[in-house]
Length: 160
Image (tube, rainbow, N blue to C red; front, side, top):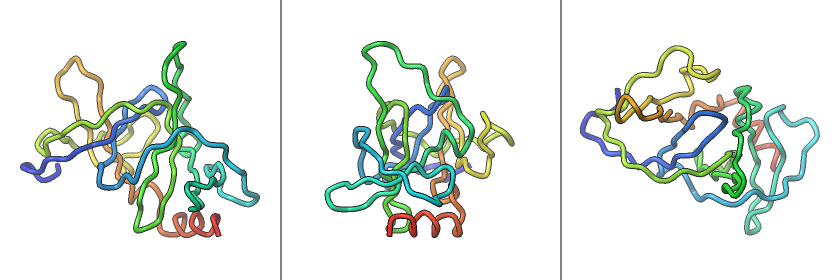
């Protein structure tokens, strides 16, 4: 699928029942959940904006975007947060249920995604990783395909 001999570092997080990962090079930071100010006329999956050290960050709800249920949290489990992505020099926050950890992944372990995976179309998925048959799948998101150019422009305009 990806370059066989390439090593990736993936920031992994839970959304609903699945574990997702994004290339660490696309992640600016991870922050605790912040109060978000809703915006009128924003796309349905844009929760609003928040101020992160004097930078206005639009916040995307991938649960709404992909019609995913929120994860069921046990007492004492960490609350979710926002993963701040850097997409073409634009900062966008995505809401996550739970941060997992950074995991190394070899390119040879990344398989092509099935056509439909938990409600998320394969066009948004860079690949699927399963270390062994007993472990859960890790879905590697392609953040540049999460939003088409028109949507990305609309999201960027939201914060202005």
